[in-house]
Amino acid sequence: MLALMSVGSVGEAVGSEPKRRSPRRAMFGFVVLAVVALLFGVPLVTLVWSGNDWPPGVQVAGTALVVLTALGFPVLMFRGHGGHSDTASRIADTLLGVVWVLFTWSVIGQAFGLALRLAGVDDPVRSRVVTAVVLLIAAVLLLWGYAEAMRVSRVRRVDVTIPRLGPGLDGLRVVLITDTHYGPIDRTRWSQGVTKVINSLDADIVAHTGDIADGEVQQRLSMAAPLADVQATFARVYVTGNHEYFSGALGWVEHMTSLGWDALHNRHLVVTRGGDSLIVAGVDDRTAAGSGLPGHHTDHEAALAGADPSQPILLLAHQPHQITGAVSHGVDLQLSGHTHGGQMWPFHYLVRLDQPVLQGLSRHSERTQLYTSRGTGFWGPPFRIFAPSEITLLTLHTPK
Image 1 (cartoon, helix red, strand yellow):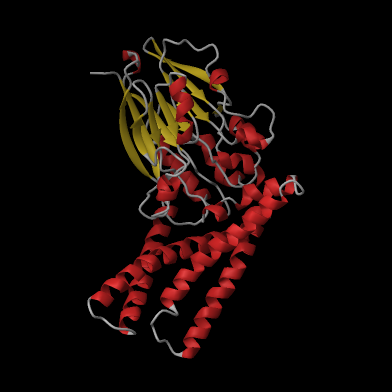
Image 2 (cartoon, helix red, strand yellow):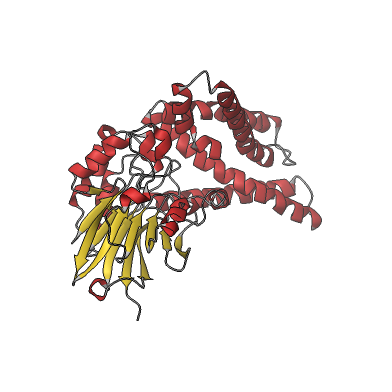
């Protein structure tokens, strides 16, 4: 699944340097085939073969359906995310979500089958019970997960105490959205709903920490348009995520500026209230340096150049992984997204291999805290399972 999720980025890299990267391309192809075989093979064995003793016609039809779907899946994925076909993306992404759930619960089902065997339940009853349980759970989770993905995010309210925050800024309200991923499914009404919720929260600052869309600006204009109506007392600020560098980062930075947002491209601004000030800074995503775009890379020093070192710092950085730089530069609070909270259980175990935090508020030094959002939208599969989306209201406090 990790390999399939990186199809777009690897495809672009291969296209730019075909000769140098042909061994890498071959290895990537092998990994994709192995992952596809595993994802589709385990459910095939569990639901069709195993000890179900289905009639031969059912076995042949079931096997043919799974094999043909598995063969078509990588083609759809490459045409969708590599060839920018929204129709292919929608089909491939939905298939990815469905097969991930079937794979996960087929593995669990095999363990359940072993328990039934130890309890003395024989085949074909044992295997048919496992099949029925796997299909029932998968259907319920997919229906629920789809509803969770498509609904307007709930508000998650978090209080954060910042020792260096001046009393004039006590109670400052920061609304965080991230990973909106405007993509092949038209979610214009959803985007309008998100803006309506944000505007109900009386925000002093609204922050978007990247992965705004999958696609170029012209493809996603209607979905991004409601961002122009977002209201904040002092600032609306935005930084790039890794997906901007697959989807025309310069275009999105310029478009967000045209919508009235401050694109914090390795720079900062100052918010002052009641005689006290807060540095609001932003850095590019950690993948920006490999994009080939001049001047795009994570640069904390540039972002904080000229800032008063005595003032507290609120930093926008797309990935929790970037917290190391925040700690070394004396940041008080970093806001991030990227993880989606795992999006589809148990994918969060793989996310934790790359990121220090999955979601929520965490401390990383005596001064530096990190808040990681589960994301406001979703990427790829239109499902959220045990990882609800969020619009985050962070209220900043001085120590009592």
